Structure formats: C-alpha cells, structure tokens
Image 1 (cartoon, rainbow, N blue to C red):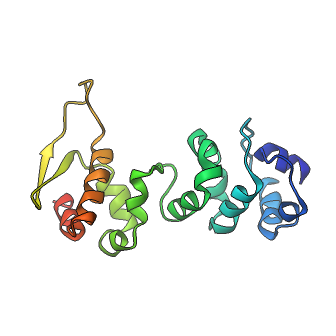
Image 2: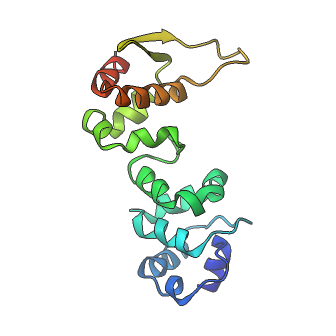
Length: 175
C-alpha cells in the first residue's frame, strides 16, 4: 500500500486512504496491471473524491496516465470522474468546454456513442446567429488560426444550451 500511495503521488497519506475499500481494491488490481508512476503531488482528499466517484479501476489507471489530469486532479477530481464514467479517455479529453457533454439536458438528446463517434469526428462547425443554426466549413487545418472543429462545436453547444437551442443544435450537428 505504501508503494502504491507513493506511485500515485499522494503526500502525507492518512489512515483514511490506506484503509479505503476502493483503495484496497486498487491495490489488488495493480498487482495484475501496471500503474503509471509520476512526479505530481496529489492531495489525498482529491484522490479519494476521484476514487469514490469513478466506476472503473481500469479507467482510473488510464486517466492517471494523462498529465493534464494529474495537473488538475486537485481541483477537478469530481468532474473528471463524472466525465470519464461516460466517455472513453482514449477518445475524449476533459476540458471546461467539454463539461457540456455531461450536462443532463445534453445527455437527453445525445448518446455517448453519438458524441464519441459523430460529434468528435464532425468536420463542420456549428454557428449560431440570432437563433439560426448553420453548419459551416472549418478553417483549413494548415492555417495558423485553425482550431479543431470538435472544440469549436463544444463552445457552440454551450451557447445553444444558454439560448434554449440545445436539442436543435444536436440535430443540426447530426446532419
């Protein structure tokens, strides 16, 4: 357990984490699977939040290989757990803009499979002007101003939600 806690980067661990039931499960799980060792410091409470809210130890070990998660785990542990309980960490990355993808209303109209398979690969960009929704071609990906269509569409989906147009926006992106 001491080695696992050290590998996870948890400084000053208490009995709380050492005896946590999911931590004991993780210890057994890591006997069969490699754990990524890193040099980041993780707060015990943040890691426990992630541990208690993540549904899969395999997913937990996969997301702990991502440096941006290790950098933000002390601040966004619950958001990471909620996001990666739905989405494959090999397909989608969490960002503040991606929070729309776990929004209750969004999930009423869009499935996880649609999000990972269609929205992620959508090459066109949703534009919203005066409550009018249109799909436009994105900049050429060789342009220095290029931003991935998926990222632009996340911003558009958030705007659509704010305007009460989320259902229509998802339909438009399905075209």
